[in-house]
Length: 170
Image (cartoon, rainbow, N blue to C red):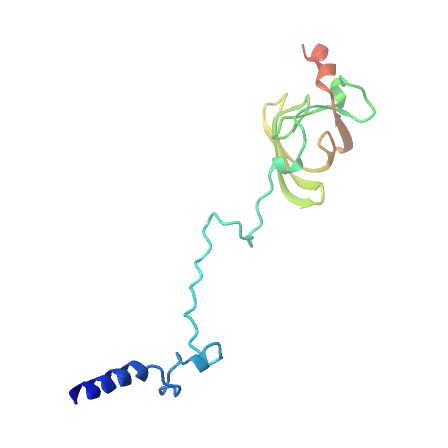
């Protein structure tokens, strides 16, 4: 008689986990699966953005003379031919706008509105050798054309093709 009692105990143990009645606080019952009362997985913490991420910055990036998108070279005032007369030329070396009177120029744009850049240019005066600064506005019409406005007035310049300058520059 011990065998049937042992067999009944094993069957009871095996079927104990298959009860249709949920235990108090149980969330693993088949009837509960998929319902709103199931245990939700823990939230995954969100890692802070790395300094190299492409997240938008609330601090605007400072403007650079490269933002102008102009081609470096010798520019002639509109309406003149290349090579330009000395009075009608401007040079753009990627840093600033030089002339026969001003060399080693550096333009620092502080404000941009569309393709118009307002800033300060500092150059070496060709005669006195002193560093001189002036407020200036550059309006870019394309990679080879710009309008320069300063205390002396406004003038538009176009890039001279290199082949027209070879005889003139030596």
